[in-house]
Amino acid sequence: MTSTPQTIVALVDGSIYSSSVCDHAAWVSKRTQAPVQLIHVLGRREAVGTQDHSGAISLGARSALLQELADLDAQRAKLIGQKGRAILEDASALLEKAGVVEVSSRLRHGDLVEAVSELAPDTRMIMIGKRGEAADFAKGHLGSNLERIVRATHRPIFVASRAYRPISRVLLAYDGGASAAKAVDFIAASPLFQGLDVCVATVGAKVAEVETGLAEAKAKLTAAGIATSAAILPGQPETALSAYIEEAGFDLLVMGAYGHSRIRSLVIGSTTTEMIRSCKVPIVLVR
Image 1 (cartoon, rainbow, N blue to C red):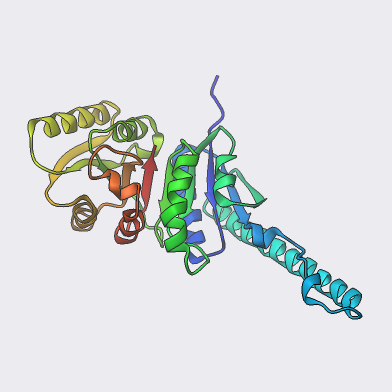
Image 2 (cartoon, rainbow, N blue to C red; image 1 turned 180 degrees about the vertical axis):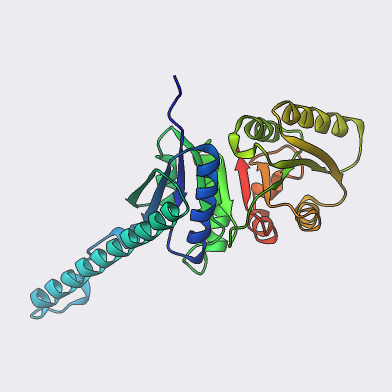
């Protein structure tokens, strides 16, 4: 008996990246035959419909003004909710137009990371944009919150680039660690990568241990029917990987969320945002 496909969760916020998230989610869905669930999260300040204004109101005018302010708070909360539902409706329309058969949506309240941690256990992948609606999204979300999201879920996280383009060539950043090994297994097992060209690359010196690790990774992917090559790049990971992606024309970067070498600093710590900014293609983080 065939099991039900795991759900692709796409986080949309109405920013210019939401369209890209939908386009990439459609690509993943059509290649894996998995349904898509759209989620829009109203932050705590947005979700709260009333505030206590009594301390700023003098006696006499208190009752009338409190009621007026309460009405304004309720109206604001209602409009924010309507905006969230409109964002989900637009995203659903994009996915349906792209040919995704099964699309659902959900409006959530509270913290984004909490929403991610509470996702159903049958989630296949989480899709999110590189930046969001807020001006400080790149600093706040892709800095501290991306690490929090990675820690909150064991599912692969697909960080969409600003615009979708067809994906045919994939670069796998490999450092020999447990996370990188899981990334190899993920690519080998997923129908998402069938028919694509994958290059397994590491950054560092060309020594026997590194060559052996690359050969093993390449063999596993080749055995899964994936056209695979390997490369050893000189330099620093954050610059070497981005440069190689541009020079060789890769369309997607896959990397482990945790490592045991310099590549670890790309995902855990302050260089997360810089790596995602400098890399112009979408990134899949595998924990």
